[in-house]
Image (cartoon, rainbow, N blue to C red; front, side, top):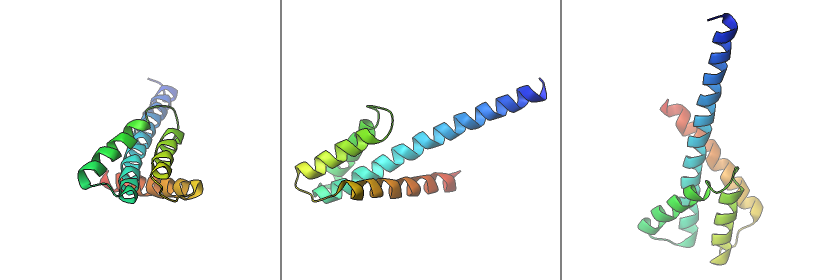
Length: 107
């Protein structure tokens, strides 16, 4: 293999690793978001765990995080929880930072 081929392979491996870490972080963030929202909804521990799973699954509906945002925002407002869109977006961003930090410390 040439140096160019080695560098190309290294770049591909890094890209794959970064994508995997981003996926794991998003899934972790979504679980945390689900648990946070479940607390606001007053769900029991068992219901909260199920709700958190539903939030994780909701992220598989489309690319990006808008599907998760829509689900959680709808669920909260439907149950009368007062929340602004910006508050939920900020919480999602905070939880993503937290999730990424946890993943980094695990590796």
